[in-house]
Amino acid sequence: MASGRALIFSYSDCAHYLAGTTQEPEGSSSAAQLLRNAEGKVAKFPSLFRAQEALKKLGYSNGWLVMQSPYDEMIGNGAAQKTELPMPFNLGD
Image 1 (cartoon, rainbow, N blue to C red):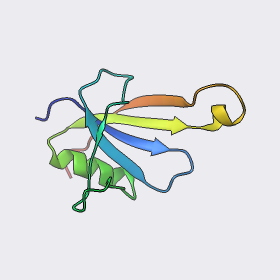
Image 2: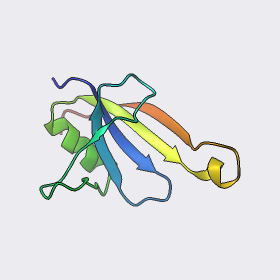
Image 3: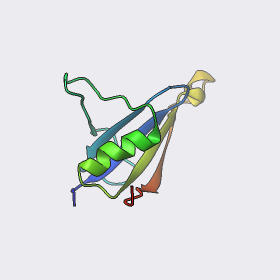
Image 4: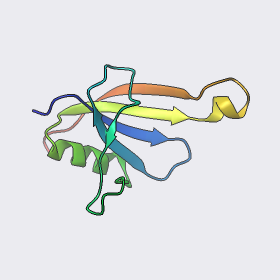
């Protein structure tokens, strides 16, 4: 079993997901270490399923979906909203 928290990042109007890990507590994901591809660039996943698969290969059985939206900033309401939702991974796959 892997230590820390597995995170999958979803950004408004973005066609891909990012995945990473952190030792930070729930509600805090600013120091997440993002997964990288073979070239050392941040890995981009075309679906939530593919991001979960990558984290499952690292030994995680659940994670957090981090949804970020810039819309509050766009209309002058301050910092962007960020929500973390618990997400169990289907280990039967």
